[in-house]
Length: 195
Image (cartoon, rainbow, N blue to C red; front, side, top):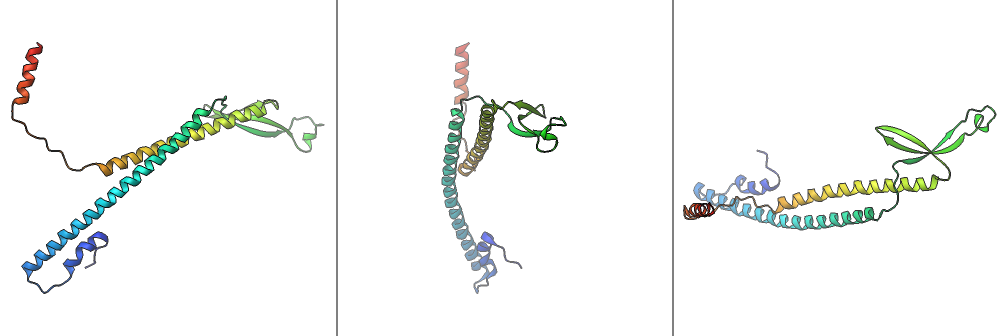
C-alpha cells in the first residue's frame, strides 16, 4: 500500500501502525486520534485563513493607492493630445541631378496613426515637429496610464472577490419560526385599512 502525502499522511499514521490492543479498544483509540488530529488541522487552516485575509487587505490597499496615483496623473493632463507617433522617413525626390539620387535621401517627418484599421501618414513641417511630437508623446503616456489603471482595477476586483470568499460563511442561515399566522393577519389588516 502506498502511503498518502501531506495532510492525509498525518491522518493515516495510526491506521497503518500495529498496536497490541484489542480490536474494539484499538478502533476507539484510532478514531479519537483521528478526530483530534482533524480538529488540529482545522484550527491551523482557520488561523492561516485569518493571515491570508490580512494580506488581502494589504494588497487591496496597495492596489487602491497605486490606482489613485494613476488617476492623479491622468487628471493633471491639460494639453492637447494627438494620437499617433512621429516617424522620420528618408525619400528620394526623383530628380536625376539631386544629391539624393546617388546618396542619402531627403529626410522628412510624418505623423503615423491608425484610422479605420489602416495606417495613415500625415506630413509634419519642421516648424510643427516639436509641438506635434509633444502632443503625440502625451497621448501615448495617457493611454499607458489608462491601460495600467484598467489592469489595477481588474486586480483590485479580483482581490476583493478573494477577500469576500475568505470571509464568507459557508453555513446556511436558519430562519426563526414565529407563531403561525401573526404576520399574515397583520398584513391583511393593513390591506383592508388601506382600501
